[in-house]
Length: 265
Image (cartoon, rainbow, N blue to C red; front, top):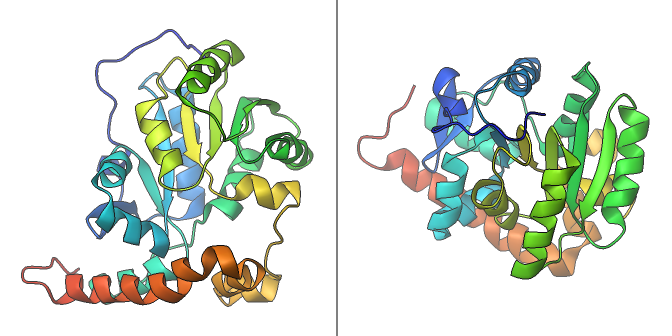
């Protein structure tokens, strides 16, 4: 990584690919293989860092309530995550996204597909979680070098220490697991070209790969019902997100659909 290069302006990754707007957020409408090719090219270029985020129904609800989150996503390449945004795409554009590119599946797929050895830094999760996740990533994509920078619990003073450590890590990719919208705000507001070339907000990925949270069985995932599985595992934490959030999401999309001058097609 050439960590010392600063470019005056970073190109918008959304500008050169098909997209659909969900709640005003440009979401890339591309296949996973195409996304991997584009990210591989970005890692090899000197055009400045790419910031990668994922948009699901819960994220859409947060976008409507948090202008700073909306602004952060505007600086990211955003990929579609889950059945909710597919329903939104059908209602708004008449067809779902080409592929469900949720971060839990896409990020390990990306690491495996990137052929040349890279240095991958991990930030986030509870203490010890990132280290265990890094071990699993090393089994999936052993040609990369994984370095754990910090857990996800730090204050402003701790952030300064983390950013210094990240500069010294000479990372190509930085995976940040702090939950939305905190991780996207961190990617956009705290990280710069000195810290890497690709910054990715990965949500609960570290917890899944550290074994703290179980993935839904393959059949449940194929049926696009993983949210039901997660609700069953963590009802106290997730009931608001799904029981209240899903109807709110659908209502918001219907309002968008029937608002005047909505661009369909």
